[in-house]
Image (tube, rainbow, N blue to C red; front, side, top):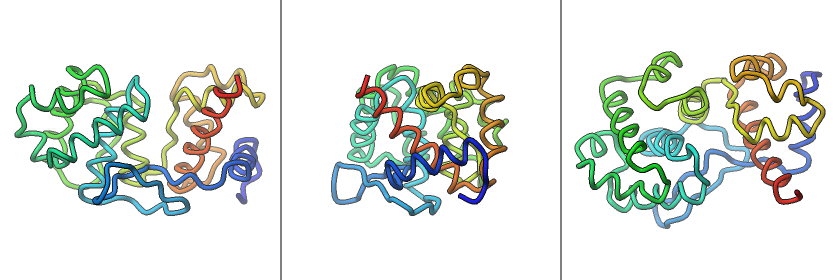
Length: 212
């Protein structure tokens, strides 16, 4: 990476260690498994975009494996569209998302998001997402970065864990917005760079957890 900053150097170190990660992983039509796409930073369209947004909500407070199980059930029910999610009975949608935990809350969140996206076109503004019930900064930024290619950094527990282990203990404890802008100021204003850096932090954070 051309920029010379502590975060840019950390990006390059993690990339050399783990290689391109290929986030956001998406389901293949012919299987019940997700496919990663290393070094492909194209922005998903159609059903893929819906899947990213749904996955960002389902990923709250649970493991990715649980999210995949819930996504598989939504696909199997042919409900991976905003129209289908709006029209589906609450009780049925709750059964589909149950593997991801907190299924009552997440069902309501998906209904809210489905109505929101069904009524609009184009990329939403961050403030609009944050105004929706159940959408916090991490979820909003995941949607913007991975579903729309907006260059914004996603701040999560993996990022804080890695920063704390790499000499940035003070920064790792900063408030969400302060940490987000600090990182964005040190990386190119490009969604591919922020996409890859976040994915690399997830990979390194998981590796640190295993080593501990």
